[in-house]
Image 1 (cartoon, one colour):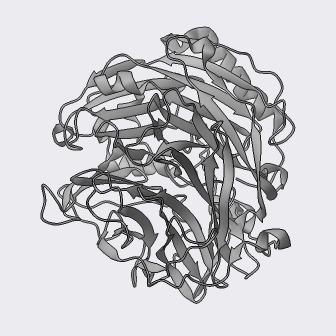
Image 2 (cartoon, one colour; image 1 turned 45 degrees about the vertical axis):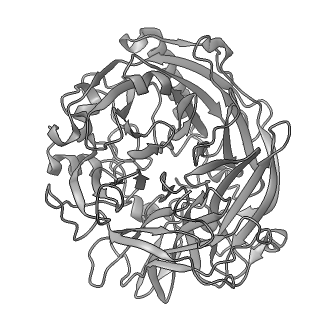
Amino acid sequence: MTNKSIPDIRLQREVLQFALCISVGFALATYTLAQAISPPAGFGNSNTVTRTTVTQNVVHDLSLALTALKSTANPTAASAECGNLHNSCGTSPEPEDVDNDIDANANIAPDLAVIESGASIEQKQQGSRDAVPLIESFDGLGEGFVGPQGTTTTRNPSDNSLAVGPDHIVQIVNSRMAVYTKKGRRYDTTGKVLYGPVITNTIFAGFGGQCELRTSGDAVVRYDQLANRWLYVLPIFRRPPDEPQGPYSMCYAVSQGADPLGPYYRYEFKRPLFPDYPRPAIWPDGYYVPTSVGDDVIQKQACVADRNKMLQGLPASEQCVFIDGVNFLNNADIDGQTLPPAGAPNIMLATGGTQLHDHFTDDGLYLYKFHVDWVDPNKTAVSPVRKITVAPYNYLCNGQLTKCVPQPGTPMRLDAQGDKLMQRLVYRRIGHDEWIAGIHSVDTKGGGGGVRWYELKLDKKREPQLYQQGTYAPDGFYRWMPSIGIDRQGNIGIGYSFGGDPNFPGQRFAARRAKDPKGALTYKEAVLAAGKASQTTTFRWEDYTTTAMDPLDDCTFWYVGDYIKAMGQSYSTRIGAFRLPTCSAKH
């Protein structure tokens, strides 16, 4: 994203494409439930427009076991294809094949903006408790990785996605995936590579269409602990080769059982608009997947796929709500086994501000409630936006695609993606209490970058209210690209990148107990990966990471992030597990 005004012609073109796609039907059943009018002038405007479409899957099937599938994609060709899309797979590439030199065009980050009223909630020193114990740690995909399928060349940004099941750990780095052992009931060690590295769309081998043909960056994996299944979501960023103005695709794969190496129910849904930056969230009535439609339009798609049908391998539909004038959305993703009340709508949150309009400062979180009705889609609805007032903030380094975090020994600075809430937006129900936690990166008075985190509590009317907030900035260095989780006791854990000259970029973890003073991370930082070199090839760094809860004990936080080894030419990833001493490993 660059700081420029919205090109009206591009917006009109996308709307025209949408209308055209609907008229021809994409050879599938798609219909519009509400028509769009002119988009609002700015974020959070009361006349923000939503429009809903319902799309049946183009095709679905049951695959062979993952270990029996062989990708038809050529790894070298796949890398070249990714290279034509903003020099990376799946990070806001242009809808058409435009080779932009994004490193050269990126903005140099301005001086950090200090908002005094926001600085009042900065935590300026580390917690007093000893660091949370690191109970597992191993290298994942990246430089030096070797698995049963050999080695691979990874690309920037890594787009780290991590999912943890009872016996396995699955990782996706951009367009590659791997499966590891997890110590416990089935294996005697953690981190042994069982499968990989392979191209992500290997899971769609033999499926046909765009899901099999196209390499997918920005692919995301989740473990659905409510059903003991694995969920893959793969966006397709190119139109069909024989339809230059045709649709994009979103591809889903849901494991038939708890084994990630087994067979999968596979689905393809057509999308009229560009499906970038998917953030899957598990909710009882659906798999919610918000996406962006591009870096130069202020519009998002909030979609939900029929989870119940997909868990059974039945024909399924996807409903999408198009929202204008909104920042990057995250849907609430359930931690633990305790469900929200029956029929409860999913909650979506976004930060304020609009980087395209040079609005980098705000004092709110913006909330929508998404209710889906699979029997009568006319009753599917998104509530009007509601602002939750928080301490003012300024995007770290004024947002995404800026050269932000300084490194030792090089003029290259790293991108912070400071304009958005990061994955995941966590929902946790403990007894009758319902909680939501979210996080992003902000400028700090201390001179570096801090992680701003929030915990919301739902009131008796199930309206989320701010319960606590904090900005973790214990020194003048940079903490950014965070991911948050809540364990079954209500303790909060946060993983994030750490850096700033003279520190090489690496990964750290901090936490708090549920009953600790509000706004404070009371455990000292734990170091997951200490960087040993600077990244000099590009300013792109991760784009996002993942914190995932262990489904067996519901206490262990798993986290993944990038670092550079000594003499490293590219990033490595480190996967680690942390558990607070107060949370027993067994229920």
